[in-house]
Amino acid sequence: MANRGIGSMDEVGIAAGYKTYLSALVRGTDEDKAVMVSENNTVALVTAGLNFTGVVRTIGDGPTILTGVQEDGYAEIGYTGSNPSVGWNYLVGGSIAGKVALADEVAVKTVEVTVDLGDTSGASAADADLVGGKIIGIVSDTNQDQLVDDVSLGETGAVTVTLAAGATADNKFVVAVQKDEATFPKRWCVRSVDTTNHTVTVDLGR
Image 1 (tube, rainbow, N blue to C red):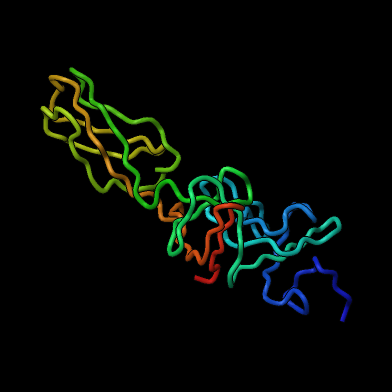
Image 2 (cartoon, helix red, strand yellow):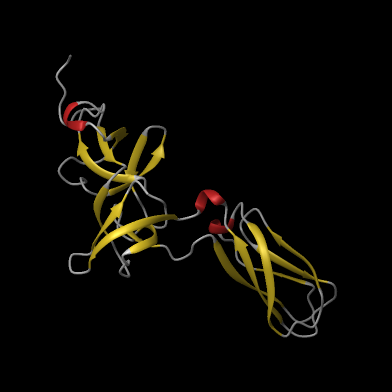
């Protein structure tokens, strides 16, 4: 059997239990940070709002960098923003790459749409978070003076509300959109929170 360095992650010997990925991570700098799968068999530090898959434990040397990622058991990760709580939390990438944070939204996001006086339709701004999603509800916010004829979600994530006739005053609505399942933040079981050092211990296997 050939000799293996600490970074030669093939799930044998000292590296047993870690999953092997390629990466452009820096040895001596990026260990113990949260990562996401960025492309086929490659990981990168998790970035804001995206799901992470595990924590870096070893980084190899050489032109081809093999990275050992812990994807099971308990792991301590740095966090940004509000303090998570012990128990179940929706965690995603934080404002600093490689750290995590509480998710702003879970599966559903609400948007405000105004149909201006005299118009029959109005739309919200494009929103990448909503691309591929599904409209699940609409409520009147203020002054609905016409029946709603249609509510649609465009390719850019913009929501359009169409009325049966021209609005006699501004009509304002709140529309609930379920995001594409692939963008749902993942729910993690938190064992402990260190609010002094801003770290959280997460059960990666649950």
